[in-house]
Image 1 (spheres, one colour):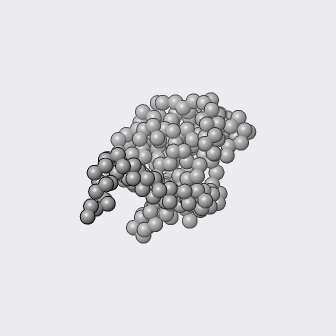
Image 2 (spheres, rainbow, N blue to C red):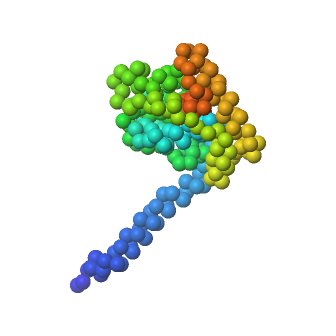
Image 3 (cartoon, rainbow, N blue to C red):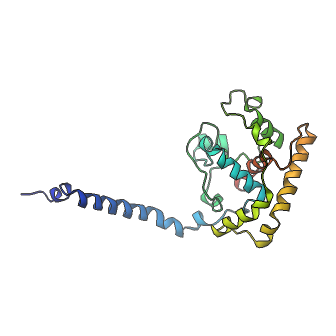
Length: 220
């Protein structure tokens, strides 16, 4: 008696079609329910969209490939939470486009690094990683202190993010260049008081602003 499986196994086109169907159904069953769970679609309490300077810093972070070595996703295991802090939850990332979760950890997870170190530490670490972490294999990013970000471009960036679902108001968008400049000046002034003079519109300032924001809404 012929095995019915032979019909499928001997027909390449039919086999491929059925494999695609099974994978599609399985994927839909796993993914679609997540869109209807409030815990995965609603922001955590206190979560706000990144202001202009931090958004510019995030662009630098992505451009330089920081997420290739640093994850932003703390798993709910004791070994992770004791080292990095409270585990990550979906509601922390609803305004992130793209997500920067990751699983590669050449360097430590950065999801809770916001506020962990002062701005001066981040500045020195980016200029010369070995000055703050002797065993670090991270390359230096001193060139970021020479590169400039254009605050005038941020309204256009924020409008794109708004189209992706980030709730920026028109007032926030219009005020973005001045707000970014003011925050950058404050960070630069703090560094100067600590003995490090750096231009307020340098990319290293924007990156520091972004790092200091990471995970502060759900530290616990």
